Length: 442
Image (cartoon, rainbow, N blue to C red; front, side):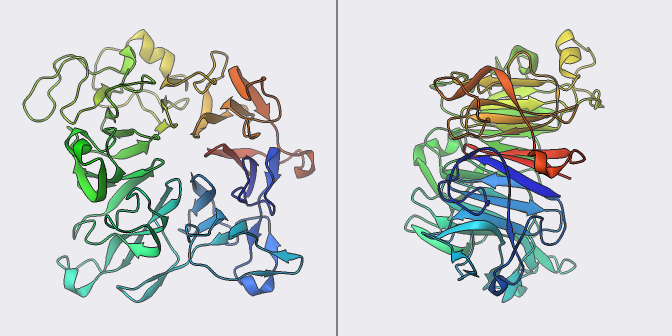
């Protein structure tokens, strides 16, 4: 597997060996496991597959099937992991930036072990959140049959409490959020926006920390404005997944979802399309009957009556993607198949929110096999293995061809791998971040 990147690169967050923006896919570089060798390679060192690409404002994190995390970009505050000097024969890393993807290895002071394998990773604008299963604290071993527990490691900067470590913490490298999750519970999903993070636990509960004043952590936490440590977000169903926009959150599970955000609704985030709207009078789980999709947690809810691969979020948009060939979900919430269901089942995307720069899928976009959503743009892997890009592309993250405002609006660009890769190379995955785009090829 090889990784190619294009877009914003002022801090080296593309991991391509320099700090210049590029508008065509450029092969990413990885440091060898032994930094002192000063060598680099063009594939993931442990030969595993990339399953998550998480992007902050100026740094990028890759999670692989083996559990390794590789990081590139700004590291002045340790957001890419503990500082260490790396010597290269032709120069050195500049301005605290990591220009080639480097494996993240942490020390857990509680269990006194080295942590190099992780389950989840996400990024705020200036921070990193990583979940690992580590040896259980003997004082916390209420489940003696399980020798490990999930722990959340956070590092980078936390000007608005987004690292969940308390009110007075500004910057930190490699700390753990204390007393979370509760003993016996695992973290099953994790996502971050610019200044908030949300975790789903194995019992279906949802917790979040960071910015809260826009309702992104639920109505019950809005008045606090900032949650400096994890707080419960009440949702009226068993949660399984989460996606975070800039200042809103989408929690989903078992065919239902809720959008938590600002009631001012500037970009229409709460305007759930009719095809996905909750049936009027659906019980919110507390015995109250709500109308027009309103949820007791202060958000706007919906139902999905077909199988879908993901619910993703840009800074100001929501994207529900149904992959081709998945068919209906069984058991279905509704026994009546509508025309809108038939339209969606072909793999298309139902999206809503901000579209002044063409962020939402254009009408001529073929059904994607995979979809990655960035801050204000999206990358789609089409069924014929072509890659399409659309939205705000001022930094080259939608390719070299944009309109006078730097947008790809109302249509899409087809992005191709470099000719030097060879005709046999095939794109098998895509990613999108903060004006950054990614293509995984084999």
